[in-house]
Image (tube, rainbow, N blue to C red):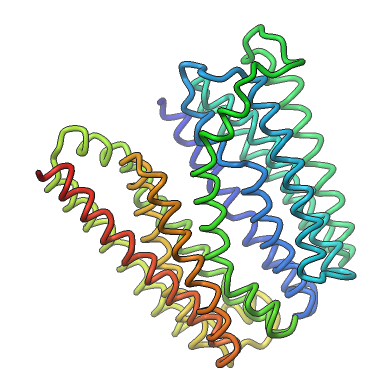
Length: 406
């Protein structure tokens, strides 16, 4: 893995992570609080449908160096998951009774995410062929140019639908470019008109990871759906405004621990459990320190900065903001644990843990939002991720103690 590849991969990941923050921030500034609420829940729904569209396959495809499955298998699997994604969009609009602008935003954002799902197919191919630089640059440019056009058009026209339409067209053009002009030279000379019969095996192999990622996103966003079902769009708009700093913390923390994932794997293979434990504890402490700094910043400057950014009065939400930042830090620790479980090849345990947390999330969110409104939504976000972190901690301790310290 060369330096150029690492740089492009980091730039691509950073740009994609910043994409949602910038879009939501600009909509919150340009539109009304209610429009921010419409757009926020539509964006959240589209992101969950994006996980459906991926179906956990990219994690497998990127590391399929021995080409256990042909590229045509990945194409057929992606067609199935895209169809599932489109059906999911219709079900979400019907199930949550989305109408008007909210339904329109959901359709347009799902179309945008569907293009990202197709683009991911080719980015994973580049990664599989050891072209990390091409994979990262494709993600970077496919995110950057459509995002710039979205921002410019939205600022000029003040129309979210027009801005999304232009963004989708730009994304479509870039996706076609990488699919038609760049990808073919990396695809083996195999017929792509019919699957090799392995598509079902591929989907079954990726299913546990897909369920885990889907449930992870449902748990993360349970508080938003609690507000959607039990409060109003004004509350949703304010919640999305204060929720964005949690995403920033998670993005920054991943730059702390992702470069060390290879070292974690090596320490486990060499059975250096004590060193592994010290490294893990050190990373958790670093995330905790980052979270404390961000909480202090949220208390001192968070409200003035966000009020200036959105041009909305959110002065009554200072405590809410601090708690969201705290929850973001706990979620970052959960993400670190998630990657450790993947290194340990315990994907099924990830799925079991998230199944349990999802069962807890529904009544917890309902009770909190019903009894305390917006503050209840914030508390449910913090409580659920605290429980999740404890479950991860207990399970990792048990696995390491049983298998490596016996």
